[in-house]
Image (cartoon, rainbow, N blue to C red):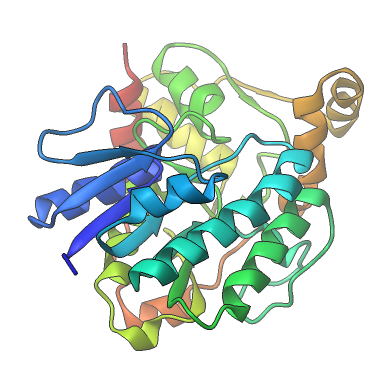
Length: 307
């Protein structure tokens, strides 16, 4: 078997993972439905639809390691239908190749909590999207054929990250001289991970020995701040005062009546109506803890989004 790593998905996390692998001289191939226009020289590509088992088998051919950083349309119906199908295809494909899998995940499956989120918290069925994530977690945990490690991260931010509460309507808007908009309370303490740190963590797991697999790991983050504080750092970096529009819970509820996307966001309100903190002590004890500070990460993000 070759030592090729296949990275499924070339969004911000996939890009960060590929960049780390390429910098280390490792052979790497990207797989997703269409070829990225900005795929770096020397990085291979295979078309892949994770919902098609034959497509997944072809994409994983020759892989020793598989890093999964895919996303699906942000609707509960799609997640409940397609995530279990995708996970089954990925497990079958990895089993056929004898490849280990590092799966980039979120923290939806632990549901509403009032304490920092740990890997030991039980899975939830609270909401369609959290239930879908719980289901695929149970699938890889029960599969006896494939060594899987899941990297769970909270909301993330960084250069190129638009689909985030700190993304297009947050730090990108500030960098472009606009007011930021926030859907929920910006004054609750809330953890965010910096996407280059996530890429580093994905490669850390790809390089880890087998005893690091068969479990989930929580992504370390910079010391917790409120979203308002982080956006204020962005405004200071851009040299402008912070202008922030906040949607009230009533406004979110009203918009949800007419906008399907807002209904999907409202389901996740439990992440924003209380302190949302990630306990990454297990990761820090095993691997590293020197994550990027908000001062450095936000400044780099604002520079990247500046016109």
